[in-house]
Length: 208
Image (cartoon, rainbow, N blue to C red; front, side):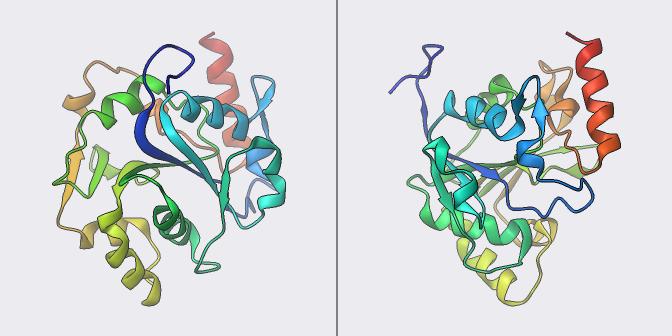
């Protein structure tokens, strides 16, 4: 199967995290408009040109039924993004999955494909780390992570960063690895408040 741009779809799963409560935003971030379309549609369009399988992590499948992709409910309710990652990895058709949030408007097909090309069977996690800060919501995870994820969930250690530190098969991609992508930090941008949304919108307007 080929993507619309002629490139072959990767035998991997793209997971869109859409299960957050969006409490600081005051409304469901997945349906905030970006460039005239809901953010979830923007992310689906990107993932659909990269991955052979795309799924949404949400406990409200009725909200996303019209998009025709799998919507996976958490096995561990109210356990945050880690609970969503566990459920989706378990259901994924492929060993590697890319995990990103629905509120990241500057996701890049080129960057995601570049990272996918760096995945190796010996790495359970491939994650960007710039200026000492990891990006767990812009990373690849292997199904091998599932036992550690489940242990973390049962112990109520819910931070993605904690689970990642417990895994000894992690490959970090540093700034030098992204030298061909000068705007790499923008790819990690997300929005949790109305002000952050406006700031990113203004940046987008000034650069189009």
